[in-house]
Image (cartoon, rainbow, N blue to C red; front, top):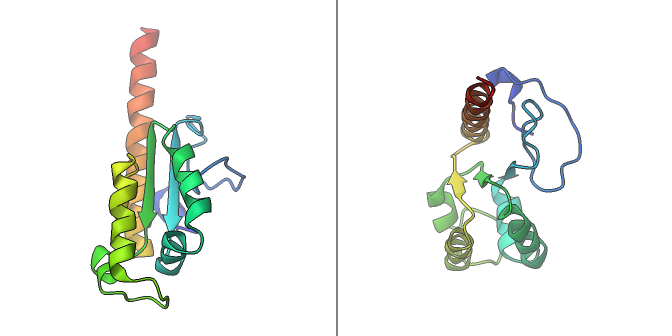
Length: 138
């Protein structure tokens, strides 16, 4: 798991319908879903687990804020720096197809980079929602 506690978040481990990370307060679990992927996991999702993963991506399209958050960078994918028979061209074409479906794919370079992206994004979404709520109450 990503170290979001290092970014000031209290972690509540619970099952989510989709994705690995969301926000419990304010409760945005029906609106935010971030799916974390290591390089080996991502490559499997481009190959043998593709049908299952694409069903999950279709569900993620219903979320206002969603992303596949990768703990590796684009160059690693293009260079085939993984143990699989899947070609780099197939892996990068999968990314292009998923982005065309409306799913952002964020290449964060490392678990630390992925944690930073998720923490910053969750913090921004929470601030946006709380600001709107405050303005609506006035």
